[in-house]
Image (cartoon, rainbow, N blue to C red; front, side, top):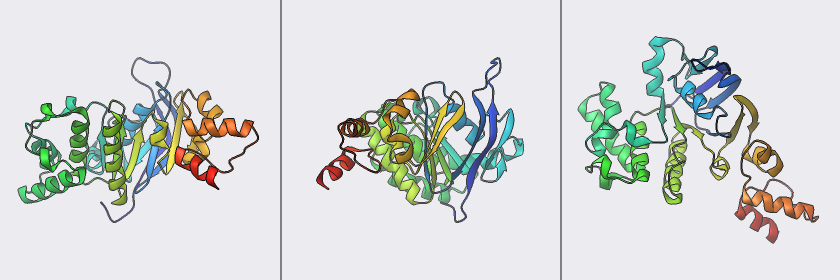
Length: 276
């Protein structure tokens, strides 16, 4: 949604929660580029959500730094601009909803930017349409399903016209259909040039990303395209994650002497290989 490409750069990021002796993140360095879909994976307690909060500037590094769209998150005067550029949605959207209707909820962010009523109306209408929730615009948020609430939360972020959207486990409590709806919305946003950083424990969601970041005990255990990182079931298990079913089938085929060659992540890719 912005013409000039931006990035979020974590540089030797270390963060320790107050009262804790062990850092939640230690020496994390990675660049998240606008227009790309990055998935962040890791077992519980690996530091995924802490990283998400650091990228948005909701918490600031104890050591190292995070530059969000060129702005140092540790500088208090940068906070407002960072919030405009880097939106974030959480696992439980209903705990953060303040509007009495869906359209009021979506308008909340733009109103806080001090925009004119005409501009706010335009942004809200566009966000509702992109999220596919125009038909529930006048409903009360508490009447919605969890999946609908999450779409409302993402629509609220869209209305801010950010360069990045951070998703902190936003699909983890949704059913399969609702998850698919949120992921489709992420893909639509990426096509519009928004950078997506999606924290998840679902490998099938990470498989559609451009880049994957795997965290283990607060450190980066691997970065790269999903095919490189997720196609080896043994490596995935060692990181405390459940391998993709297709990769386990490919592993069994290899043990029988039938090597698939290349990376197999999905059932569709297995089917194509079998027909080759």
